[in-house]
Image (cartoon, rainbow, N blue to C red):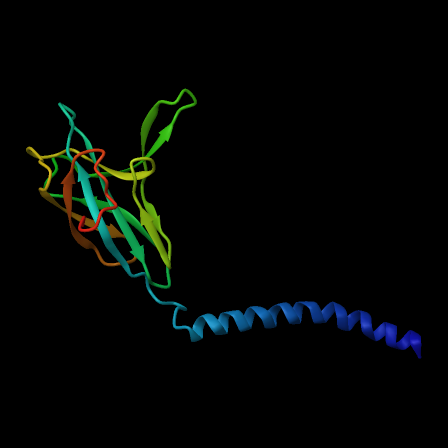
Length: 172
């Protein structure tokens, strides 16, 4: 009798582990679906938008956006346009060389994760722009942000002096 029960236990244990793993995965997917997040589209919003006032004779400056995505799917920022610039705005990422010099590298898109978002900063992802005319602090510049899956967002970014605290209340 002990030989027969040992012969039965081995196949049952071998089959039981994958069945248990599938059951746990199914329970997790069921909970995700029940929460209403399964398959829901991205829902991106802009909570802050500002652009640095050009400094001196600089032809380029940078715009920054804080994006939130409370949808159930990630999205990707793929294009930015503005009528207030002389050239199309470009997504870029700032990097540092081993000697400490900074440089800008163009990027094709920027991820906006589900349940999270993207905060652009001077030390990471931002938008390089060439101003049309003179921009002064307090001016508002219109931008349209286009995404891979979500609807385009039209937003006005306020011009601030470089170095201005952007975490203060009231800044768009």
